[in-house]
Amino acid sequence: MLTLLLRRTPIILIVVLTLIVSPFLFFPWSDIGPHDKQRIVEVLVLSLGAVLALFRFVQSKVPSMLSRKTIYWLGCFFFLGFLSSLQAYSIRHALYEWSSFGLLLLLAWTIALELREAPDALLRKVLLICGIGCVLYFYKEFFLYILALQIDGQPNPEVFIFGFDNLRFFNHIQTISLPLLGLWAVHSALNQRNESRFTSQIFPFIATSFWWMMLFVSAGRGTFIGVFAGIIGAWLFQRRLAMPWCRVMIITCLAGLCAYAIFFVTLPILVGLQPFGFLSELGSRTLSDPTSSRLSLWWRAWEMILAHPIFGAGPLHFAHYATNVQFGAHPHNWILQIASEWGVPAVFCLIVVIVIAFRSLMRTATKIKPGDEKNQAALAAFLATGIAILVDGLVSGLIVMPTSQLWIVLYVGCAWGWVSSLSNETKALPPEGSQVLHKAALALTVLVLLICFGCGLWPEILSLPKYEAKAVDSGVYVRNVLRPRLWKAGYF
Image (cartoon, rainbow, N blue to C red; front, side):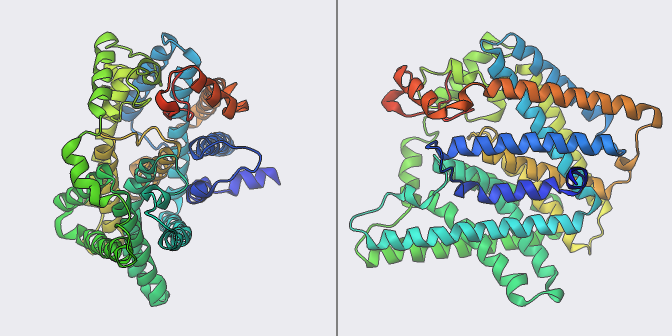
């Protein structure tokens, strides 16, 4: 029974279901905050994903999904990260971050394998569940909104973004989910022959527009810039072939802006309140502090790079060396983060892998017929999402927070599996004689990753509230404001 369950349980659906319930997490036996709850759930998902990946690989032959060039550069990246971890101030914290990156990649690989076998059916389910998750979020948002209209006094705008310690963590997931919701709307419209008009067009349109409205409420500049950079990038690459997806994104954006103007500006004014949300403050906030105090973080990362150019200070170790900056436990820039923690050679290897991945994605354009609207829209959405992640990640902690990490894994796995489904080159199996060696190597790798992963979590995970109290008592945090990285008490 267990064997059958492990073999047939789609990890991709486990991941996407986890993502949509993450803002609603409630542990009745604990008083820990949303960030730590989401980290615990991520730990469970990564562990389950590693076990399922290992089980399925051992049970059957698995096709190659990476070119030799990609394997080489990825191997160099993780080897350099391992060496960096061994010379870090806290080896167990460094190895946690190193192993978590490995487990995230393993989870993405497992998702890609699943989606490669049934790209249309699985992708359709994933997009539908994402849309349902948005509607569930809106359901609770609606009650918060009604309550805000009825209370005396001006409500704090942050009450409209629930389930996250910081509203920017919500923006991180929007950077990835917004383009995918646009893809859902396009695919649903193309499937309208088999569905009602509401299911095929109106429901996806409303859900995507609502997600845009929430972006206007939270006024996340990094997400705005990232998503629009993605839209422009997709259009420049595909031109008219990207227009169905680009058109949906622009129309739903305008619809979301209109909904924001009605519900968060006009109605509050009619009842004698100021507009809700942060959009009205966006201009003044940008003029007064364009980088939102990130310059101090970027400068500290640069100092770390100069001090440790080859191997960095150690994965996760910006949290240790930036305590006196008092703004964040990560530099809010993925290039500076990897360079300062893993070293300059490691970030070079990672950039090479990203370039190879984008080239593979863009080469699928030659394999898709111009009239294949579904796959043309998928190419536009996947390309735009990748651009959005890279651009937003230059000014945010997109690659740090647990929920956004899982969203990135979902995106990478879906895009990877979709590209593989269109390419015959990745379907070749390794030689029969090397299967045993491959399985033994993977088993050993997963075992090492899980041991390093667990050592980094222990013993703080046993009592997170006490760990946070101890961190506050140490006097490291100004005004007792915790700075999340691994846990909400991010510094060590």
